[in-house]
Length: 520
Length: 99
Image (cartoon, rainbow over all chains, first blue to last red; front, side, top):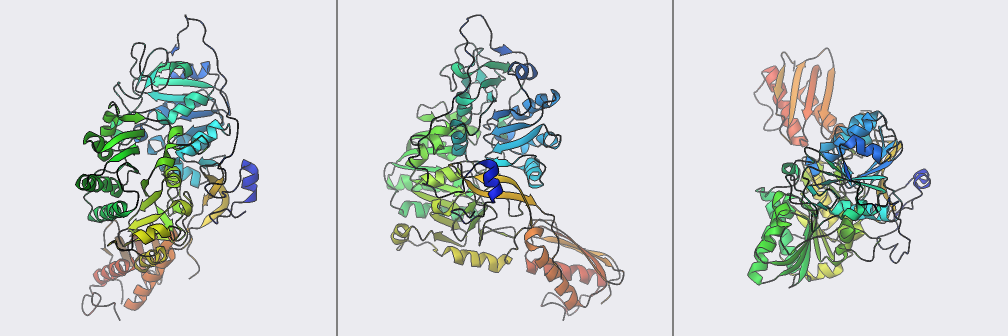
């Protein structure tokens, strides 16, 4: 069946998953449902300890068995040790057919490849994957379907009961012996625990893993003891220095700085730029640079930001430091400056649900004026791809891309027109992750295209001195330089789905086929 | 022109390609490793074959490791490698391909 972004979703996949094809951002607005709830084992006695000696023992205590679903969070990003540590013990116990439901996975989790190949892991549900796991999925090695869902979409899937997490593991920088958890205060800080809050609320068993046990009460707790079954102390839960791996550092790349300037110029000329506006950026080099140049204009024109959301980085925390923003709402810290900023009184921690879940009574993303995002590919229908590389291999993550893009009044995507030989603006993206209806503006080094749907923005940019072009013109410039790419050759087999934030199917990912030259 | 010895041109930097040519065994042997083979493999082969044809080469082993080079770069690197392999530097190449 062809969905609302023109993608053909095979009937057998709809049947197999029980899902519907994507029908537009607001199709489920007003939808009513009853939330799921966890099986809870009460602690009434005042004698038992929640402390367990090691991971293996806690797995046994939690009743680990074949076919379970395990929850993980990714606040340590490329410095995470928890997933590998737990899966090694699951593997050693001879457990099979595990589904991993993580808020994200990265190259740090390459060791899971072995467990995918031997059947320990048969399902992966994540915002995205990189490295060897991505390659394994695209090679068709995962027994089940990989499901890529946004941060908001993951909360929806868990709260609605579509996914039931049997055991959730929370890497906690500090914990007391009763399971009050904080993202700060230990030797390996990650700042916030936002993505694991839904796991704590909905998983049947919740295991805290810490490398810094503190005395009771570890308050104010980011996750309460009332939700935690067991606490395990290990040597190290992660390497905070690697939190910033992959995220951009301040750029000196002239091309990115130019795009950042274009972006700021656009932002300040759009109608939302006034005292009390709200703003979020991703961690691309140009996005970060645009925050820096925006801060300058805000100062010059005496405009204050009401709140910033993230995925936070140093430039966003600097706004707070310099008194240019009233509040920061934080779901994740992309660098150590952001981790350190968490202790400030106007730096608020929010859950992934508060941040982006489309199936609650209203999330922060709906209050955003601007969001500045990146993309691997954008097509002439403004559909974005952030998960599947142009070579067809899964190598990225949705993150909050579809959530913020859908929620914000003005969604700006920044991407260099060509990366190596790959055109970022193309006729058809390899895989759709964020629908074009969510994207308002695309900024490249060769020009800026406003979605024709946004005639209001086109109108108010009439007098603005920026290189406006149509999206088709941008594509044509790209193709004139690098040539028109051929479609990647895929096998028919579907290996994964890109889930819309409302749980529908946005697109499917197919098994990659080895390249063969066409007949000359 | 006859390839008489092995030669190499280009680098493994992003947006470049490294071209190696060796004496062939009576035909053109083409091998390609490319970061963009899925999207541009056929196009790269076409550019290489045209360039060899323009240079009058039909007996060569040519191997290319491509890091996303544009057509103009690929053509220049093939011409460079062939020039070095044939010691033929006059009149050719960088003002326009061998005619």
